[in-house]
Image (tube, rainbow, N blue to C red; front, side):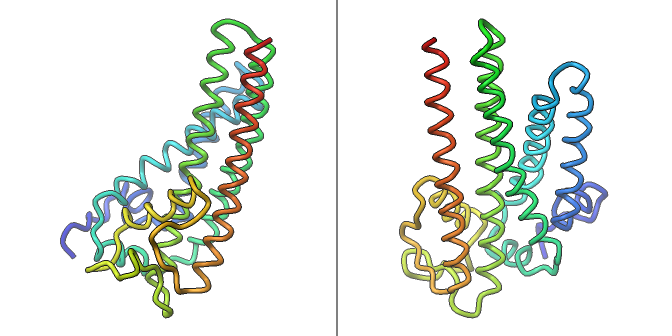
Amino acid sequence: MKGIPTKTLYHRSLGWHAPALRRAVIVASIGLIVALALLPFMAWELAAVGGWDTAALAFLITVWPIIVPADGSHTALLARREDETRGTAAVLLVGAGVTSLLGVGFTLSLAGRQGGSMRILLIGVATLTVLLSWTIVHTVFTLRYADLHFGSTAGGIGFGGESVPGGPTYRDLAYVSFTIGMTYQVSDTAISDPRIRGTVLSHAILSYVFGVVIVAGGVNLLAGLAR
């Protein structure tokens, strides 16, 4: 199919042709290397946060260049491709994203005991970690909705109550995912497949948890700055 990259080492490892778990393992390895490099200079919790931020950024940099230009046919091809590692990779990535919020709590707690430029730096690290983790979660759900939609025999996801001509693109499915991430509900999409509705429910609950953590972190931050 026109527009599909050749199977270079990069695309077999991290790009278009990479199995999901292979990509997750490689970016996790990058993050681990960074965390180990930082360990002699800071507390292990901060080193772990730095490693996670690096891994998360590497994942987003490798995935979004695939998502953004993909048309309906490319999206369908990628979603229907046989890859038994997708579920495992998704669980690992979402789990790591949620777990990283513990590191955010530690970083904000440490920031509350610091002053001057160090406090500003730690607050910046905590904010970056939340943004990256939030984006990772909803990117993984974007990929998951593509898999479910193109594998559905019950109609999948309808946009505006209708099917998208040529099939939805990853951008359409990102619209669904990030809308749920910000509002905890779908907007103008009709979901006729019970499996997808179940995924939306779990996604909305997870998004709410993220929202609560972000609000709690913000309150803690303001309280720390007020002291």
